[in-house]
Every structure is written in structure tokens, then in C-alpha cells.
Image 1 (cartoon, each protein chain N blue to C red):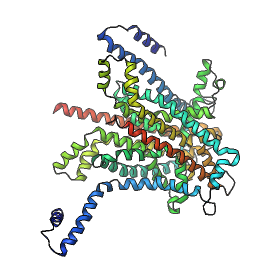
Image 2 (image 1 turned 180 degrees about the vertical axis):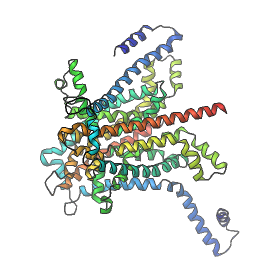
Image 3 (image 1 turned 90 degrees about the vertical axis):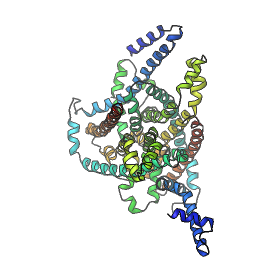
Image 4 (image 1 turned 30 degrees about the horizontal axis):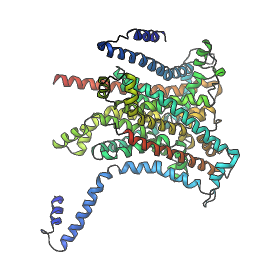
Amino acid sequence: MAPLVGEVAEAENEVVPSFSTGSSKRRRRVRWWRGVVLVLAGAFFLIPVYAGVKFSLQNNEHHFSFQAYESLASAPGFTAALTLSLKIALVTMVVSTLLMVPTAIYVHVRLPRLRRLLDVVTVLPIVIPPIVLIVGVLGVYPLWAKSSPYLLSFMYVILAMPFVYRSLDAGIGAIDLKTLTEASRSLGGSWSKTMWRVILPNIRPALLSATVLTLALVFGEYTMAQLDIWQTIPVWIAQFQVSSDGPVQVAASMIGLMGTWVLLLLVVSIDRSESRRNRKKLRSS
Amino acid sequence: MSHSEVTASDSGTLIPGSDAVTYHRISRLRRLFRHIAPALGIAPFIIYSFLGLGIPAIAVTYYAFQKEKGGWTFSNINFMLTGEKHVFLTGFENSIKLGLLSAVIPGILGVFIAYAIQTSNSNILRRLTSTAAGVLANFGGINLTFMFIATLGSTGILTYWLADIGIKLSNIGFNLYTFSGVLVVYMYFQLPLMVLVVTPALGGLRASWREAAENMGASSWQYWLRVGIPVLLPSILGGMLLLFGSAFAAYATAETLTLGLISLSPIQIGNYLNGNVIAGQTHVGYAIAFGMLVILSITMILYSLVRRRASKWLR
């Protein structure tokens, strides 16, 4: 906290009523409050992660140990739950990509007027409670559908929609889709070729981050899985009640969290190296 | 090929007799098709959304007005509104209160965070934001519960740190396992959601507006009061409506944190579904779900109205 306060004082001292320093004064003021906001937000989001990781790295005598992570693999039901979650995640990611990527591109190229409709529809899964959705689904869907774990995949595609669509929409909005498609078409590329060779490579970062989002969702979703009675990882964690093994549960949920963050950083670094390579290409040409 | 045939038949001179009639009919079909064809591109999406969102909503509404053994009735709704000493109304009241509080507080803070990230010089931070915010906004339920128990529970890290500087959480009326705790924990996914929603709107604030205001001698305050906030307001309100819906809808976090003891509407539905109630009353769960849908429909209508205004400045 102390250095930030110091910065404030420094900024106040610099109030010189002259035209030329006016903008630099403002920039400095912006910088200190920006620092405060970012530090506080960072603390709010990172302290719980730190607390969780620290707790999972304790043994029963509150000493540092990897005990929880070691006993995780042999914990009853963990492997089955992990396999189930991975299968559901894979199906969800594939279906979500196949559904949302063509839709998002198509709306951008051919039906820009419908973007507002999609904006509202894709926001619905945030506000319609998952519990209401699963209650409705379990009420009317046929038995063969309800007895399959992939019903969860079907619903997770819906739950991921707001985030996947937004990610793709931003990615597509950032490239000049119209010029690219027109260029490709006028050079004789078919629609499928345009899609594979021109559009998809250009929105790869957005696509990757949409996939990571979906993965995070599947490994965190509890409501639907619990009411549909499938023991995915979150349900297993909640039900694995061995009171002395608190750290084991926390370890399980921390693995998911850290896995997500590693993937996230990977996506960002791929994105960065790609844009750097592009810049280099531009400069050399 | 077929294209030219159709235009030829349209003129009606090249192909005489009965052939012209058939060609004419085909051309009309084709014209109709060409009119609808663009919409077919998003048909899979529409069908999927209908199966995943529409059908469950219709089913819930239908069952809310059905007797246990079939036949229409209002008794489920009546029971929800008056039965059990108004416990369901209390649930709605708490849920709405939680929704409003965790819409307004993270709603305002989220704008500041989004602006701080937007104007920061760090490229990585900005690029990380959209994905990280998406991941965090999805973060809920059991994982979040564990993290916060380790942070703010009775033996949590932050509880100790605060005790060291003389702040006892229990003395200021904070308890992780009650309403106040749920509110703080909800911030963990509400803040990122707000950042996600409001960032595009902040990008819409053009530098030229600020320069124009400065050239006319406006101070920073005046710029924000007269230009910035009025332009952003629809987007901020829209974001807050979304946050309201999201908090109102959340189940897993409150359920795992309070072990289902807090009376919120989603938890009450869960109790009905998990069979924690007397047999023959399961349709009351549908009635509560229907009640939630009604409140959320109002929220969504407001949202789309606000969005329309917001999109005026967004390109």
C-alpha cells in the first residue's frame, strides 16, 4: 500500500497550471488509481487461489506435504469421475465448435442484421438458471437421452454459448472478414476453402480461448451434473466426504483450476507469438 | 445454368405453353428459397437453442400448471404464493435482494476494473482479460466454495491476516456461511462477468470525443459527467441486468457454501428435485421455477431495451 500512497503525493505535487504539463499530469493521476484498482482486483482474485493451494499442500498436522495430491489418484471413484468429465468435455468442445463457429462467421458475413438477435439469445443461458433448465430437460426428454451422460454435453454447449459466442464474435470482429472473404472468393476459392484456409487460421486465438472456456465450464459445473446424477469431478468432490481428508477434496479442485490457468497462459502465449510472427513478416516484406 | 433458365421463363416469351407454367412455378419457389436461404445458415443454431433453452422453459411452465396426476390446476402456483408460511416468497425476496446487491456492487467496481485494464499499457493483461474473465465468470460451485473457506472461513488465511491487524470478521457481522458470505463469494464470478460485458462499450469511447471536450476546455470531471457516463450508461445498466440474472440464477455456489440452508429460490427448487420434500408436492418445484422464469423474462425485456440504446454508440 505504502508505495501507492507515495505515488499519489507525487502526483498531487505536480499540479502546475501550465498548458504543456496538463496532459502529463492527468496521465500520472490515471496511472496511480489504475494501479490501486488493479492491485486490489488482483488481490481479490489471487488470494483465494493462494489460500486454496496452500490448504491443499498440508498434511493432517498442518505441515507442508504433497500427501493430498498423492492420495488423490487412489481415492475411490476419482479416476472414474475424471474419465467421465474428460469424455463429456471432449464431446462438448467438438459440438460447441461445430455449432458456434459456422454460426458466428455466417452471421458476420451474410446476416449482420441478426447480430442483435444472437446477442440476446446467447445471453439467455446466463440468466436462465441452470437448475430450471435441467428440471425442464429431466421432465420432458426421453429416457434414452436422460440415461446418457452426453445429455450433459448437450446442455453444456448451451451453458457455454454466452462465452463462446462472445469470444468468437470479438475474434471475428477484429479481422477484416469481408475483405478477406471477398479476396479469397475473387481468387477462385470455394466457400469451404475460404473457411479452412482463410477464416479459421485468422480466428485461431478466439477459437482456442473458446475451447478453454468450455473446458473450464465442464470441469466446474455442478448443478446439472448433480441433478442428472452423473458423478463428474465437481460432483465427486462434493460427495467425497472423508472428514479428515479435507485437503484431498481441495487438491482435486485446485488441479482443475491450475490446469485451466496453464491452458489459458498457453493460449495467450500462442496468440502473442503468432502476432509477433505476423508483424515480423510484415516488416520484412 | 439453371439461373438463366429461370430468368428466361420469367419473361414468358422464350418457352411457350405448359412448360412456361411449370417453369414459372419453379421460379417462384426459387425466389422464395432465395429469400429464406440466408436464414437457413443459422437454422442449426436456432434449432439447438430451441431444444436446449425453449423446450425446458416450456416444460417447466407446463408442469407448473399441471396436477401431479395430470389436468390443469392453479394449486401449485397458489401453494407457492401462500403455502408453508410464505417460505417460497421469502426465497424470492432473498434471491432478488442478493441479485440486486450483487448486480450493483460488482457492476460499479467492474467498470473501474475494466477501464483500468483497457487503459493500461500491458498488452498481455488486455489480451488475458477476455479469456481469464470468461474462465472466472464460469468459476463457481464447489471449487469456489473451497477456495473461500480456505480464505475467509473461521481458519482462513485472510481471517488470520485481518485478525492480526485487529479486525475480527465476526464482529463486523460477516459470516461466510450466510447471506453476507454468499454476496462476497458471488463477487468472484460477477466482477469478471461485468468486465467481460462492459469492455466492448469502453472500447467504443472514442479518443476524439475526449480531445474535443478538452479543446473546449472541459475538465476530466466534466468530460465524464457530460460525455463518458451518458454514453456508457446503457451498457452499464445492461451489464447490471445481466449480473442480476446471473446471481438470481446461481445455485451451486450457495448450495455448497451454506449446505442448502440459505433460503433462495434456486435452492428451494433443488430441495424439491432432490426429494427432500413430502411426496406429491414435486410440482411445487416447477411452480417456483416458473416464478423465476417470470422475473427473468422481465429482466431480459429490460436488457434488450437497454441494449438497443447502447448499440447506438457501438460500432
